[in-house]
Length: 216
Length: 216
Image (tube, rainbow over all chains, first blue to last red; front, top):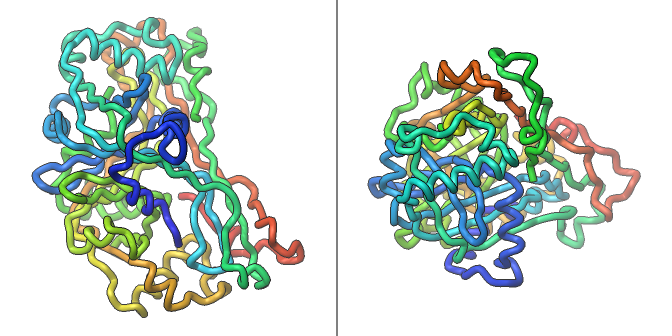
């Protein structure tokens, strides 16, 4: 049962231009879906929180409530940002060779707070427009209270590794002859039809920015 | 932009019989999908690794390679196990109220290694059979080398919190009248058709255990 856990061996590897650590692969995993898990140390213990990430060039961004004790402790501290897309269950002829197909990524670095309000606003615009292209300018503008309540963090994409598994099970050579079904159960994330807010005026059409939302 | 990150405020809460920390809710999030992210402290820095979890009663289990330095450091150490299911994008009338629908869970505790080989094997059987009911007994049996290469960890489900968001956006009262589309884009994980191993004898039918695999 070789699992995604082995990604951990790659800690301290620098992002390279080629191989498992190449930027193109890492950017592809980040851009394939916004959900990430960020690991902090809070009061000496690990804490792993789900949030949404977005990439701007060679940096990754995430945000949270300014009231969060965790986020305040994260400023300037070492964090690990992990993104995982589960693509399938790999069903083998022995328990040991069962696995999963996946694309995953661990990034290490120090979280930096975007302190300047104008810059923070610009990054939040990139976040919204990255998900829903062009939506920001159609929205009720962000106010100072909301901006103060929001902390934007980022780190450079410098240290980490992507790991990708695709394809059929890899069994022990002598096991291939056994009369046991083996293969892959693909898993996909799909979008359902948009559900309008119950308080939406039915005359308001579904905008392009929402239709343009994509997973992966 | 209220996000999943706020789950972190719930650290140090004991699992209760009711409310956000009730066992039924927590078990439901664990049982809805095997992917989890486990946070360790390795050489003083946080490390977040994706792996698969399974539940047996009031304990959660995961496994990994015995060769993993991270897993060896995890034994007896404080860890955080996080499970997140992304159910939809919540599209609001202001950037701030954009959100996601999700079911998430953070569990805190000390990772305990299952040292006894017979017990470890029994737990791995539960893992396989939990995914593919009845499959374990159809497989080439696990051998000692494979068992030695596999470390099974667990912790009691005692400290943590589930957090669930469902439903439409919650906008500022005065924003509902704005001519801006708002609603939810549902996200679902779906299974594709099983893909047989290229080396599979076509006479071997798809077994019940693989057909019975369910997400959620």
